[in-house]
Length: 94
Image (cartoon, rainbow, N blue to C red; front, top):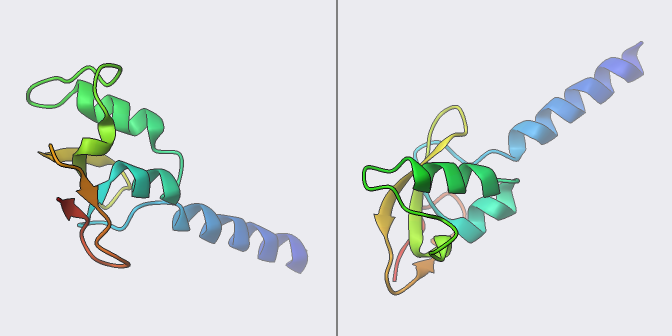
């Protein structure tokens, strides 16, 4: 029984680690490295203040803000590209 509980705790911690860190801005490539954010990126672009067709743009040219529940929201257009800000730091536009 202890083995099962330990395994469940490990699985829960691994799945939680796949979420982005709340309050930070991320480039799409870093979100994809955290977990499978592909569908979330598409959805946030489609539902932005000015909807964007994700099939017609390079979604790497946007910043996405991570919320407490692991959801994301598009925050900024990065016409010159997106830069990795490093661990525990915001990514930013070039």
